[in-house]
Image (cartoon, rainbow, N blue to C red):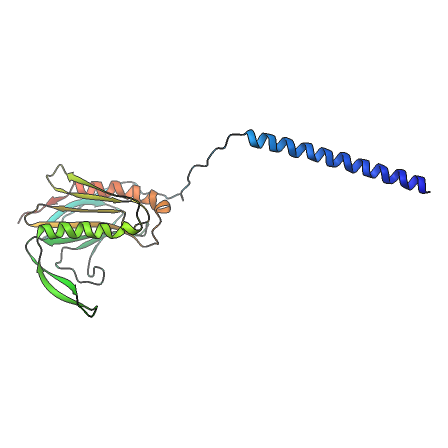
Length: 232
């Protein structure tokens, strides 16, 4: 009986050794091929967004000092408040894109006109103060508002624009996770000044918003290229 048990035990040990040896060779083979294989990076993916067909309609409102073409899938909303401040005049509007959770703020100013500015007091409170809209100051303000994103952006590029309609201005592209990746201003330098900024009603994330930003970039370019000042 002992001999039979010993032979059986020895045979089981032998089988286990062969199994272990086989597994060892399999693992070595896998490691060999994995070490010599070429690494291929995965392409960056984005959430699929169904974009509407591009169509444009004219914005031509009686009394407004400007006109342009805007996307038919946007909603024009008259701006009653602008970041907790009252607009200077009735020519401030928003272009809403509900399907994207986005909005383009358009704030109009009259060069040389009076405006209400909030001035910070020594105690930290703000007080309304009347000032004059000087062209140079408005250009400086446009740059300052854009540069507020420097803490979270990796690049700010500004480009001078000259449109077919003779309108001039500056376009800002803000990189990184800025709240306003697309900003611009247009002016005739003597009477009219308008600033535009694209915002999204979500936490800024350049990766997830890129497809929508790229799509609306074309619409903003069309708006600018069709923009005209209406002379009274």
